[in-house]
Image (cartoon, rainbow, N blue to C red; front, side):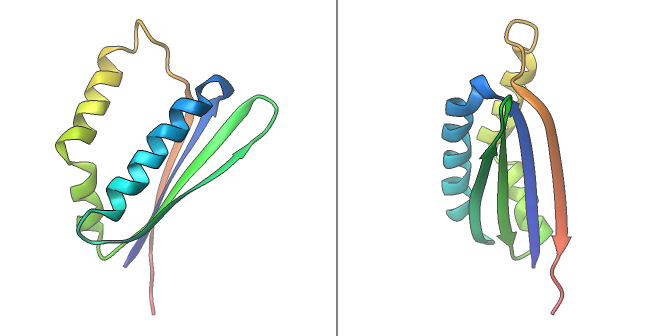
Amino acid sequence: MIVQTVTFIIKKEGKKMFEAKTSKDVVSMLGFSGCISSECWYTEDKDTCEFMLVSKWESKKDFQSWLKRPEHLQEHRDAHKNKDTKPSIVIEKIRKSYDVSA
């Protein structure tokens, strides 16, 4: 089993959009083969918001399959295509994977 985290530190004006995005991602993960659990943790300070998606997977391959689903890849293509006209609200993205040993 692995635990996968991805943390997004974002500009405060993106809070509502990221709430919607992370809610959708949690539901998507929970319905995906190999996902054991998924939740989103949230905190904010004066200038930024932080969203951390935490999910448990049967294997790294299962998580990678979720990442490679067509709608996720399209979201990234669209964001990259629009980066000149629509600046990113993401300040930092940190992704980590942990192996769980018995």
